[in-house]
Image (cartoon, rainbow, N blue to C red; front, side, top):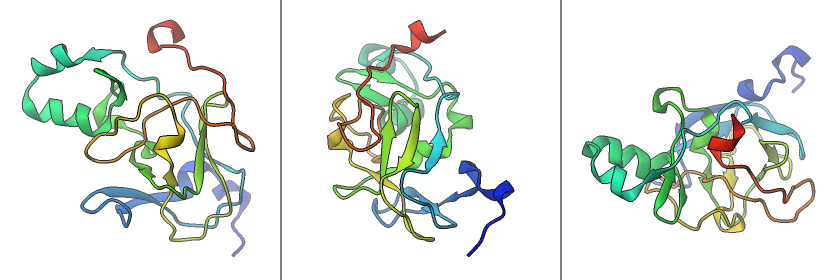
Length: 165
């Protein structure tokens, strides 16, 4: 299927649907074929809010605590939530798979296709390949990390949110 160049933008390549990987969860699916090494999501404008400790989280209402557990990036007992839970990018819904079709490149601050992805295929990342933290929220969504050495992957460390201003 040939897609006009004007429609080859990352945010037009995917959509959210019930996940086939994470029962009861939401996943990201390709709506057109995506070629290996193509950027899928540019995450450079989605700067996390900053650190929220377990102690701070315990003072928040239960539904807010659950949002942090489900979607925040984890570093041990510290959470790094999206800046605005109501404006989360679609990439926050990329689920884990031990045989992923995507990789997060820290240096380029984006998600890339690790291989060709077919229309209708759910996007996935191997969380265990990212040493940022092995903790995943109950929703199973991606947590940012330093990516493994792989074709096209960077190993540059991401600056803490406070120092990226």
